[in-house]
Image (cartoon, rainbow, N blue to C red; front, side):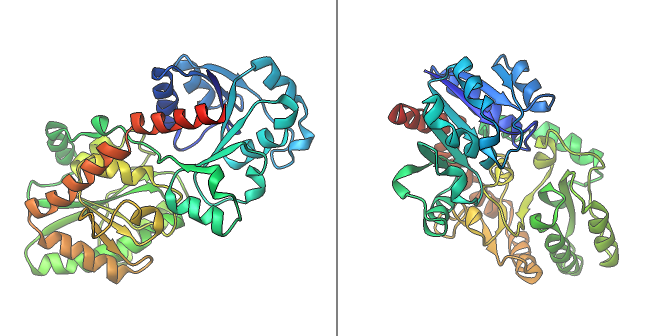
Length: 359
């Protein structure tokens, strides 16, 4: 079976796990091909990983009928199945499906208009809540959607205590200090302004109780870095922020003690999985992409009210009051869930079952 993985982009923020997913499918016997736009990191990553890579740029992504040359391209590549990511690729592949006669499986990672997926043979949702949204709000057929969670390589993120100590020292974090961390691109929907306001309240509690705490925002990019620094300064707190985008977040996560995800909205958060795989206790906002993984019943983290600094501060203080063993219970429960349900192998096996069903 050969599968053409098609993304209408030069680059994506989740490029590394995407390539890892393709490579894991290859380990299960899938011959993988890659189609993307030319000249970007995705093309280079495909070639670096010895994936047979093709490039193509549609005339107008949102108007598939303006790119009839796509049919000739697919006939030339001759895959058994096309698997798309991003709505523009789904729209193009689905529109021309009856012309090139190759089945199309389309994955969606966030809410989208159903029209982009109307031509797909089958769809994959990265989360149960998202499937429900696309069925109830967008009117898609539930029988044509399977759920395959985005994976994380837990072994890769397993905590390295030596590197933790070295990196904490480089950040100026003492052994008796608790480092709260958030992670993501510096944009409004990630909610880091909420986390900074919450941290200022927690800092007052910590100072009154002789506790030492710090806050790091791991990530980069976006348009909010200076706004975050100004907000922290106005509240009288200091935050640790890398000056450049962090390509490898592992040492930052290993240096951390408590992981906080205050996002206003998400499709499905790879960052949360990476925090859990790094054996960190977590606090998340009460949005469905998070509560599908973190819950009171699973005893694997704390949940705060979305966009509410007071609620996040209360959860952070509750986590701070727990001793190391109390926080470790959350981390251990989460890690068990990750290893059972969110590994690259689990995602690849479920995806392969769908391929076989469609073909």
